[in-house]
Each structure stands twice: as C-alpha cells, then as structure tokens.
Length: 199
Image (cartoon, rainbow, N blue to C red):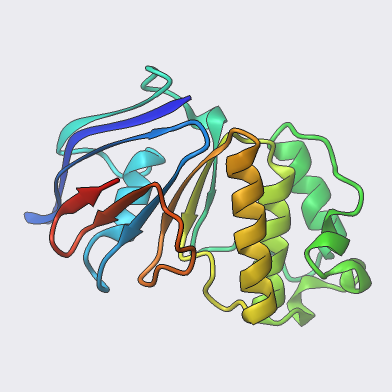
C-alpha cells in the first residue's frame, strides 16, 4: 500500500496555498500534517481526497490516480442529521460505504446508551465520537483525518490514539492534520509553515 504525493502545489484565487510538497505514505504508517491556521493543512488533505484540483504535481494510491473507494475522510463537516439516531446513522453509513454493520461499535465509542437518541441532542464531542464510529465501520485502508481530536475530551482523545494505532498495526495508513502533535508517533512529519517533510 502506498500513497504517493509528488511535487504537489495548489493555487486558489491566485494565492499559493501548497508549495512543492512530496512524501510517500506506506503500509502501517502515519503522516502528520502540521502548521498554523491558514497554512494549508485542510487543503492538502482535500487535494489527496480529490476534492481540490492540483495546480502542479501528482497524487496516486497504489499507482492508481482514481482511488476514492480506498479511503475514508473525516472532515470538519460531520454531516449528521439531527432527527435520526446514532444507530440509524451508523447503519446508513455502513451501507453507503459498502461495509457491514459492526455490532457494538457505538458501545465502543461510548455512545451505547445514546444509540436510540436523536442526534440533535448529542453534544459536539458526542457527535465527534459518532463520526469516529463511522471511521471504525468504514473498512477502508487509508484514513484521511482533519483535526480529529477537536471537541474531544481527554478520554476520547486517548481512545482516538488507540484506534489509530490499531489501524496502523493492522496494515492501514493514516494521513492526519493537526495544529498540535497529539499522537507523538508520526512516521512522516509535514510542516507547512516551513515547507519541511521529515521521516
């Protein structure tokens, strides 16, 4: 498994957001995109996901240019409908992503007692836990995570680290953006403030 980002640059409205970034993320690796607000962390993730066109460079996954069925992206827009329950949400997303419903996934993320409650009554942190349950249910090898620890309390952040490490150990790969290094074990570090990539 290999996500290859080669000499990627991106301009939007004539302004250079990403400048000549290259890295290769392999099986069982985690890459951390860091930088200050406005440095392009989300834009880089969205380029990898194919949501923003490249101005220059090339991105491929396992040598393929089209790989949308290979990843799950957790972004800022949680896309949670307020009138359905967490259980209904997970069943829908499991079906949509072509993955089987995992019994106990809501219990695992701490939402077992709320699985029949309309999502509009969940706190922001509980909604973030629901999206993490989607992640666990996705059965995708590549995870693209945009500030995944936002709105999470200390226990939920610890749990997020655990499932990220589990995914790595099972042969998955993770590209995560964060303004803080909450993981501490990145195989590749991409600092957009100083345009530096290290491993």
